[in-house]
Length: 310
Image 1: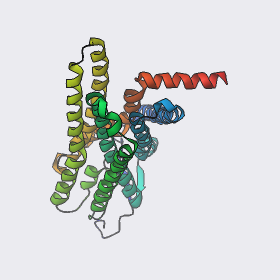
Image 2: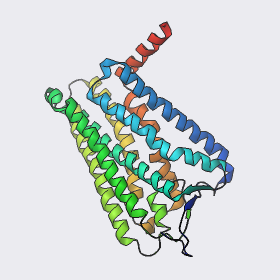
Image 3: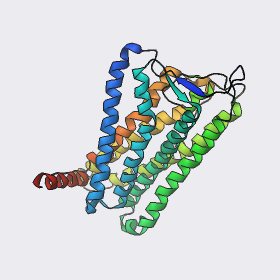
Image 4: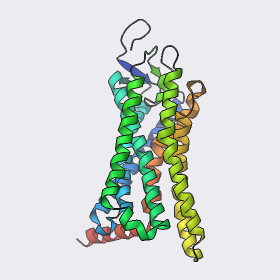
């Protein structure tokens, strides 16, 4: 890990949005507001689910972990991004960059598998309702969540170890956080084998859960269309389409970043795409998965009444 003149690399420079300095105040205001709303909304979901015993079901068990994950996932990159908007250039230490990449991949991959677990839960609930209690028992739900975290840690450790054992010939990262593709731009020599390894792991970590979700929702939609009540069909279809919209946004943008070689890297486009899966989806998930849910809104009203009366 040496610089061109054989000086050890101790830090990197994050360019962030330095190409549009006039937009920095606007971007800071928007991103800070989104970050604050994300933290508050996900924190509110965790608090309400824990406070209301009627929500202690597998679906809300997964949702609690998703909200917990989103809080840390967005906190890995957003504070540094906001700092980058306040100054022209932001430096990050070598090990700080490695830690940021590890935790970003850790929470991101864990979310991929957790979303797949949530879609499986909905598949069993709608398509196999008579076996739901037996299949989605507490032990199995815990195993799915633990499995998601294990997959996230394995991928994060592998990619981070791979990347930070490569020789760097530059320290300027044309991105707002330590992402794999921009770092590949700084690596000396041929990175073909390393890129193949990243793409192969991305296929397993992104595309496999994505196709599991697509299969689950395909079965769910088929069951919905067989429902006799048009009103029930509309409600179920509305919920599923919202879930699929968020899932497609998250997996689509992440897949575009990780399922292509270094030669296809486009800094301006990729920064925008990274904003979607790093900033936007942690905000959309609580809205789509809970705030549009009748049971959750009922629990929120009960909690508000309780505190208002007190």
